[in-house]
Image (cartoon, rainbow, N blue to C red; front, side):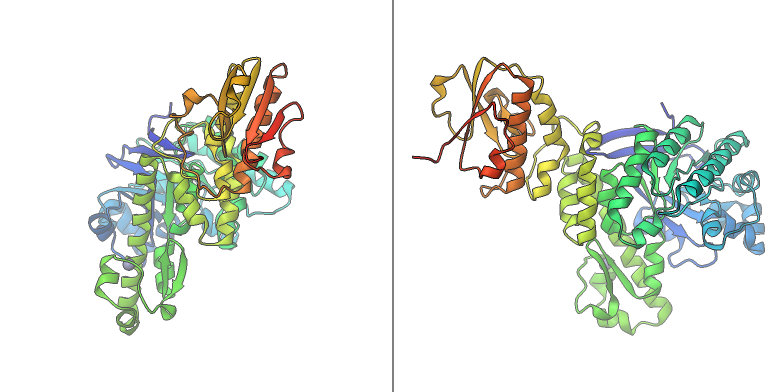
Length: 491
Ligand SMILES: [Zn+2]
């Protein structure tokens, strides 16, 4: 059991957890957002992040501090907490990003870890190699080997109470990401960033991002706190949380503000294109778009940065509440509708439904079937697996609606899209209490037919008959030949 992280609540792959940061003497509730602070220019003062936005943790770049003489001297003399005037936990990055951008940096893992320790960082980062997506396999393997060596060097550095992160690389090769996760998990290091995903997000490749995270998670195991490194747009937080990410860092709030870009959970808008401000944060209630446009550059940047942060923290709170209420996937479905690439991300998430099912609670408040994707949710996967373990009589009717012709069989079970068959005694248990639209879609019928087929395959000696309400032939083809079928709407 990893001592610094405890999972309190789960929904799909998402979790509410507690990250204990001993050197800062604080406990950070996850999912958490780490605003990125550039030590040379702060759009929003770190103290304000804590008091006004409730930030419990932030991230800054130790390499920039190391390379900026006056900041370095002040950091070594006063410590990061005094330098930034921030009371929460402070994580530091190592310069790996600079390495990936400029190809070279002039510190070693030992030097930068010792430096991070010396300036009072609470969570430090070694110099890993952020391998970009789509490189050839030889390069991905070779760079991963270097990252492994760096993690082993990091384990040997005397870091006291400071937590140290173990980045998971491996480009877009799921097997390499999984192996990297397994290796990182086997070290004594504490926090696990999934690295080099920024190029995927910049290209809206949320499907590939989910595959990469899912692979890293398979290697890491359930008790590892996972940081999606460089993920700062609130639009994708719910999706990434549902796949099991616990920490996000946002430079986006400041970078976007600098370009007059206004964040929303449905995407980014340019201030010039806004006639209204669709937000109730203090910035948006006190200003009209014209007011904001009329402000001097630095004030406009600061106000937009504040709005961007409000939206970002609000989404984190909404996600936590959704996990607590057990409706995180309903939130992901809503977010997936904001952009076709987000929908690809959600559909890819559901490719991993069996993986998500392991942490998905057996019982929740409600299951709302709100899109054809709902038919592939972990609850449906779990029910279909459960069908193989249910005791079936010699002759069984599974039927929609009331048990017409029920007296011709030993037993009569219900059939409900998208789950398929189940004994009537389970009618009141989750997820079979799901709210499904009366105008059922084809995906729900197909999933129900697959459930019937699964039951028949698990009980080859039973006589199973399906009563359905006008299922199309294409759906009925999914039900095994061994099942007798009749249409309740006939005659
Ligand atoms: Zn606002």
